[in-house]
Image (cartoon, rainbow, N blue to C red):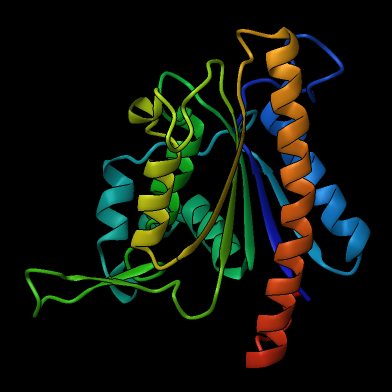
Length: 237
């Protein structure tokens, strides 16, 4: 059984195609998860709408608590980390992380950055090796294969790999860097472009992206199922 963690980070609550101002990234994640469940209905999904319900920002109390060994934490420190504990445990449990996010001002929305800051956690998703000052960070999420599916919507065009605007895209590279840092190594990126252009440009990009999503679901289910069969990855409830 595969466990999916599904995040939507768009400030727009609806699905594209129903209203002119609804979300294309949500449309892609909804397509991915619904196609996945149609093919494998017993697989499980945890959903978080961080666009409408953003995680808290890191604070002085959060930093002091997260860098204090668990056995030494005071009660207020556990309270300061309660949300982070829940978000991090959801990520640890996931086999496939599906992130739907808009491309805001060349990067990710604040809600998604807040989620990243909550789950890059000393003791949970990474460790520090004090004997190695050159490379002290030890990722903890490389214990088994995990896949990240990044489904993006962009207002302009040419921000993908090889595009004339690719050098200005700090969304996928930033996400991949942060998640690789804690041990995840499999990434799949699909984008809708041309929201601000609209018309045939947006329509063609949407059709292409949906086709890629459907193909990715099929390929990823085969890959994840093969790994679980081969190495005996335990089923997650």
